[in-house]
Image (cartoon, rainbow, N blue to C red; front, top):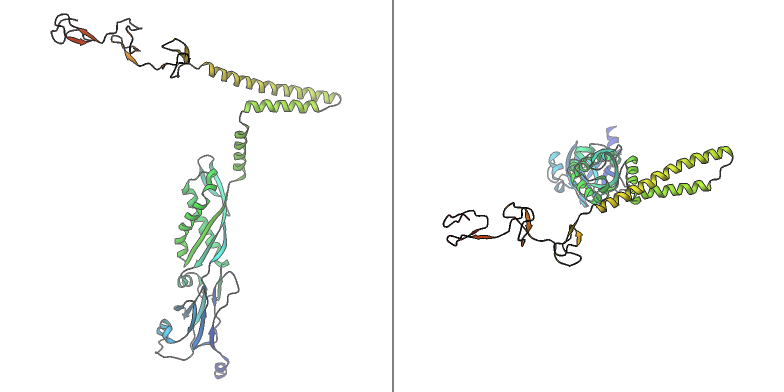
Length: 382
């Protein structure tokens, strides 16, 4: 029986994998029950890596190209199996093809809203979605950490885990950025770049490289968007008093066009007239108040007299509108009461003191300051 099974098994002479899928990450070459012939041909295509595993332990790794399997180019497997140099008998080993191409258009999105503190709206809930791409950069790490000994592995088996990793990292990034909700759309590119850099270390732990990450949309809850629309409408309307007057006039026009019949119509007309009358009164009262406030504000503007021609001019004016001379006259303190007066004034308008700059001692003829009471030279009273 054993002799029959020996002849039933086949020697594998060609090892290759043609990937006809878009999401297969690892493919195990079917060698169960068969032996690989020493000198067999191994074909590894671009974006592939072939890994030989001996009894669960990673052995030799082959990159793209065509390889003849001999002990010379399988040093690790030769050592693990204690083969002698020149060994040419068939052998058994597990062969895994790892796909190293980019797996693009992988989607991420928030299943639950992200709670954030916004400087304008306070606490808000933010939703977002986008896409990312990644590839296997360290096949041996990937095989040890994720794949194990399965016969195949595709992106669906790791998709949920990667998406949760990305959501966790981006939630932290959005909160740390402290960008106002109204300005988020301006920073999609910056957030995408920072998110990719933030996630690289987490992907490396599985032997992956994240090649791209994009934030496609960040949206606010419906109630926040409605509040933003109201604020925009208020900005468009501008003067609310004039808008109320406009609404009241429109309501009167609609009421005049609405023909009611009978007593019910008359009663409804009287009620509507009273209501509209109140609306008109409030609207025009508000308008008059705003007009009076504007006039009051204008009347409170302070004025002053021109120091040259006594014309009334604005207190903040720098030149007189009548004579054209500068009105900002340099002032100095009075020598007695220190009230600020014109620099060239001869007498103080407050105390009447004559403004002199110096005093001459009648005893010694020494010149002293105008504020001096005694001569600094002879001591006589001034």
